[in-house]
Image 1: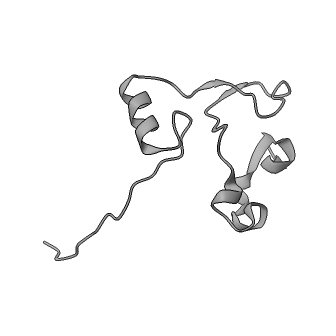
Image 2 (image 1 turned 60 degrees about the horizontal axis):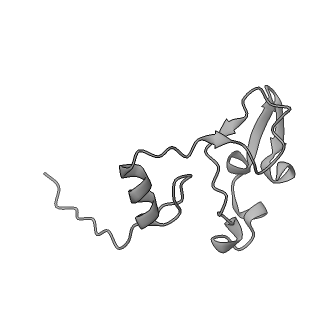
Length: 91
C-alpha cells in the first residue's frame, strides 16, 4: 500500500447542464439532459445537429489567449474525414 496522499482543494464543472457545481448537481439529480439542437453556429451542413453545448462558456475567462493556448486537438473538429475545421471559425 502506498503512503501517497491527495488533497482536493476545490471542485468545479463546466458542462451543458451547468457551469457551476450547484446548478450542475441539481440538473444531474433531476435527470436533465444537456443534449439539444446546436444553436451556437449553423450546423445544417452536418449530419448530426445535436450536441452538448455550453452556451455561457467563454474560454477567455480561463485562458490568456484561448485560440493559441489550447492544443489543436481541442479547438479543431472534423468537418468530414480528413478535412479539419477550426472550431473558432464556426463560432
